Image (cartoon, rainbow over all chains, first blue to last red):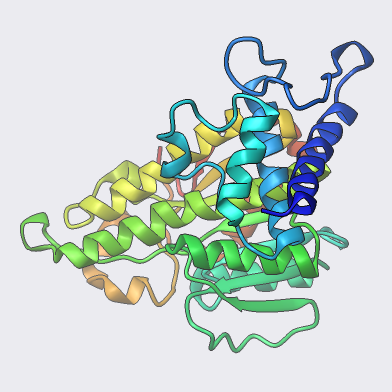
Length: 99
Length: 236
């Protein structure tokens, strides 16, 4: 797996989170980094925000890498833990799907 | 022109109620995308884009919306009209026919609505209108699966109305009565006449009856109207 691809996927996730931050108030901003918790205990995202991030990511990854991906198919949802726990886990899962 | 600048997607646009609604939106200045299972949509009009999409097929729907996103960038109003009907006693209903109704009428409405919401959420505005049926309320013999799917699309709209409300997307259902379409031709006319005769307003629906309620649900002023089902003809 090239480091360029890893960097590009990570940046795509960050961009989805930045887009989310644009819709949130100044006191409600999400701190964006590799450990940002996306799902479960400690997550700053409500369920609709997570859905928005997933939808943005599916579109952006498909556009950028020319391969449609689904982040919420049966395979994703049956993983333990689910691949949305934090940014790094999500990046790893997306790279798997693109491999 | 009521819909100037709006992009409207109508499923099952090749004929029947879908065709009359596509033509209505075009007359009112909208840009209209018509989803039809077959690529032989013969409507030629400025602002009309026919697309061969099988609404019951998730990949086909995803491809259709991908094309919409890349060419038009958004969709404002969606009319979930595509439906198939086989009327038959349950004990002899062919399973394939029953499955076909579930896939087109219910699963198709689900797939199209969710893909539409993904596009609508960016603009924080959307109207999703499902075409239901009097069958959902009157529950006529022979229409077990069809009536169930039409009841289900109203429930689907009601739940989606809650999910999409923060995105300023409304979801409503219009329960139509019988209107002169190809679908009506599949039913015994004397039985349909008897059903219509029993309605509080005992006549067949007109195109204007349908457009009137669709316009109401689609209007800017209806932003506070969601998760509602309106039946024509006095059905409730």
